[in-house]
Length: 267
Image (cartoon, rainbow, N blue to C red; front, side):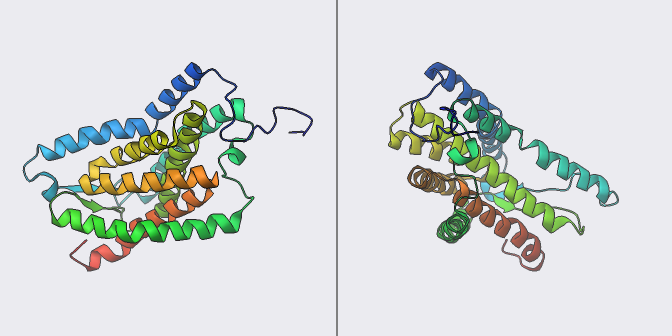
């Protein structure tokens, strides 16, 4: 947009909202119910089911990134994987659209642009290391204590496109969770004049809850990750490093499981 347009770049996250607070509140509820909020509800239902089954969490396995067709139809499986990944971006597009209505360029607003590529890549890699190593230790500890399900992170057929699809799945998760759950949600809660501690707590609880299906280790670990990521976004005003960090973490989990799990017994 031209700089002559006064509303072209109202990109300060804490700027007063141009939409009424009640409209923003309804908007947040709708976006979350179509995305991470719905995942949180299903996650609660899932863990209730797991806890009431014989063996509970200790004997349960949560499968992720599964094949969608028989091994004899790899092309159909690939088509379904790609359609699923593409349609999953709809809530992200909706959140960005809503932000554009009163905030100008939504990508610039939440720091998902190319202004600081080195910062995004290096900051994301550092975040991934800080989160990933303790997170792995927490997972194995919680599983040993019977407080977490076993996570089977990749369950695709033996196909040539397994690794590319897992990388795309990692990127998909990162974009949804960091754009909607952090960039969009934190921005809107700031506009609604929530206190910083309440914003961090809200995002932390949301992230922990939609991972609750994994068990209590996953819940606690993702609450901590949520608090760290929310604080980083509020300080940096960028989701770029968060998307990079989340993508790296999920690639390590998904592709690492695919390559290592067939050869070891402890995963």
